[in-house]
Length: 152
Image 1 (cartoon, rainbow, N blue to C red):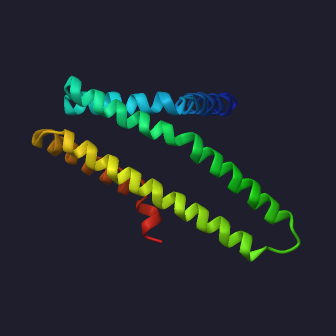
Image 2: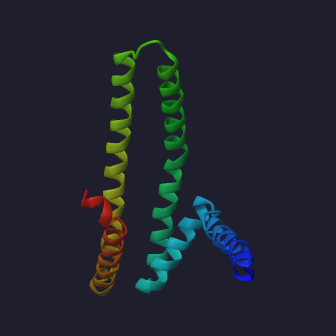
């Protein structure tokens, strides 16, 4: 009886501690997360000062795009909310929204691959191999994380 009396509060306490610990992991700003990524890349690939400066410039270019992306996302949400409240969906408005978002996505994909190429070109062959191995690691980690989703 004594064991049952303490097991539920102990279980609740353990769950609470885990929840508080995990929730603290996501309190970083995008800038803090980006800085950690840049720091990890710099450390793992042993970048020199010139390479660090180029990587920092790439990071800043990504952040320069952020306000426009946020504005478009907010505008899209506002339009979708308006469409949801309307008695019927205006197909022309929906097509315009889809086209605008596709265009922005295509621009962003092109920008990403251009920056990927720029990053590749600044690395030595040894650093490229280290980067490729790190990419393989994350690919496997991602695959492991989503293995249940791919089997459906």
